[in-house]
Image 1 (cartoon, rainbow, N blue to C red):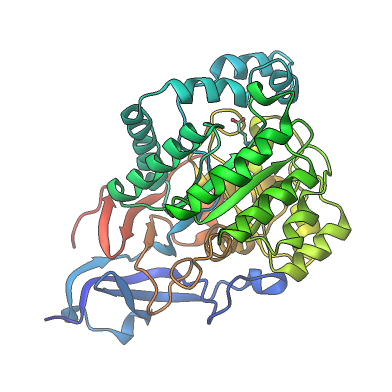
Image 2 (image 1 turned 120 degrees about the horizontal axis):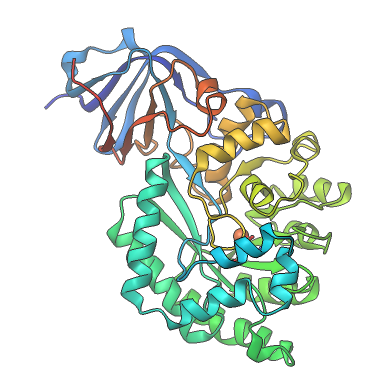
Length: 421
Ligand code: NIG
Ligand code: FE
């Protein structure tokens, strides 16, 4: 028996993002990547068994050795906010927006989320699974090894449960770790337009108990926004979620300052997401509640809106994560690397902050930073090997995928153009 199943050896940089037990990084700690030059990572039984200088290990101790000279090793990316399970496309709406209609105007005229709800309700389950598996493959190809997926295109009891059952199937079928979130409170479905209270009651009294009982989700999300749910409705929904043992998160202050961030702080939510319009008061509260701010630059790009003010949020001491928000209406992309480039180029996040935001802090937003998000002994062997000599290149030379290998749970699951030495 050799000590390692796999040894990645002689990397130009091993970017560990080591946190020494910290759940997330904020402030100056977000600029500390703990890089090992000429490093090695040893894997045993799916976990990281060694990380340190290449000189510290013997290549004879490994079943397989990967020569990573000239390359950069990172922890697997965590995409902590997606709506990956849906049917149909919204390319017609995309064209309308390009011609001048706004996202909110389209939603108000019965399109937008409601359009995807119609298609998703009508879709046979195997079609939903198949579409999502293809997108998961795409995510993995960009380096996502853990992903959150929300329901939210069912919006009735049967279809919200159907979506979460599809997510449960994905967990069995795909190597990427999938973390399920219940978003029955995405918008009020059209059939409840004149009796919103009844929909909130359906979510709190029927859907949440069922989702919790069957362990179909780990957390409950709510979209607090003009045209979606009020802060008061959001509070009722999250309170029910907590009563049933679910964690919480909020789509907060995306288009307007609607109290979403305050609500997230009030519930010590795992994450407050979007935050384009969050005020200084609410940022201070998020810092105190330990909530991770999940910023979604792909949405701003896709909807042609100003980028979230990341510097203000970072400087307030809130731990920041980045995610795709992959969905058919506000960000049709699985490319998590692009989110890093956008955050750097358009939001003035330093490249170090970007790396922490895509790894450890995103893992914290999913309550998994004890297992993934950094290269530390005992954590899952989820590793990315990039064909570039330093982490800066990944985001600097943008729109190109520099990934050559993905190791998931210690297994090589993706390998491009690599020749054994
Ligand atoms: O995160 N903000 C609300 N929901 C999604 C968009 C969903 C859609 O347009 O289909 C979002 O941006
Ligand atoms: Fe979203």
